[in-house]
Amino acid sequence: MTVLLVPYHLDERLPDDEFPVAADRVVAKELHGGRFWARVADLYDLVGDAVATAKRPTTVVTADCTVALGVVTGLQRLGLDPSVMWFDAHGDLHTPASSASGYPGGMVLRMLLGEGDGTVAETTGLTPIPPERVHLIDARDLDAPEIEYLAGSPIAHQPIESATAPEGPIYLHIDLDVLDAESVPGLRYPVTPGPTPGLLRDAALGALATGRVVAMTIACTWRPGENAAHAARGLIGELLAAAGKARSAETGS
Image (cartoon, rainbow, N blue to C red; front, side, top):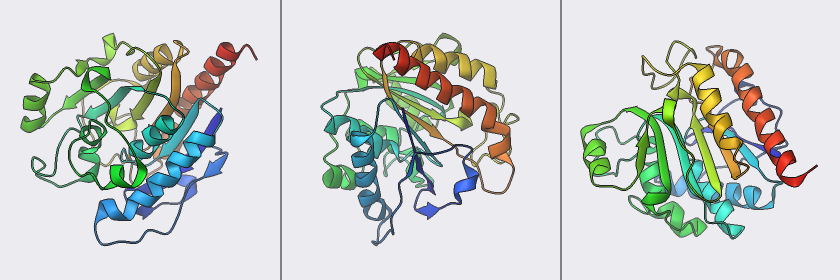
C-alpha cells in the first residue's frame, strides 16, 4: 500500500503536520493561473501520475474533496473503470450554475460524472463515471438543486447504517465531515447530528473487506490549528491498517 499526502485545501498549501499520517510521498507543486480550476489542474495531473505508479491500494490524504479528480484520473490511467463509494455530509453535486456559494469542493462529485467545469478533465484526460456506479453515503446536508438532481439520477443515495459497496473496482472517498461535528473539532462545514467514528469505521471497513478497493481518499476537511489531527488520528490509523490488510489478503502476502 502507498500513502500519498496532497497537503492542500483547494489551492492553499497547508502544513504537513495537519495530517496525522506518515506519507510515502508528498505530492505538491507551485500553482499558477487565473481561474481556480486552471490553477489546480496540473496538480491533479501529478496526483494522477502518482496514483498510477503507486502500489495499490493507494490512500490519498488531503484537505478537501477536489483531489478526487486526480485520484480517479490515476486509476483510469491504470486501465481501471472504478465505481465510487462517496462518504460525505454533503452531496458535492453542484454545478457552477446551481451553487450559491461557488465553493469548488461542492461540485467535485458532479464533475466526476462529467458535468460542470471541464478544465481538469481537459488537462488530465479524466473520463466521466456513469452515475449508476456511484454510491453516495450519508449526504444528510443537501441543497435544493442537489435534491432535485438526485431525484432523477440513478446514483444510490444510502444512509451510512446500510451502506453497500458498488460493483467492480472501488474508489472509496471519505470526507471526515461525514462525522458528527462533535467528533472532530474545527471542521470547515460541520453538520450535526451525524454518524459516530465507530459507525463510519465499520462502514468503511465493510467496503475494504470486499478486497475491491483500489484507492481510498481521506479528506481531512478541518481548519488548521484546532487540534483536529489529534482527534482523528485513531480513526485514520484504523482505516490505513485495514486498507493494508485488505491488500495483503488479496495478494496472499
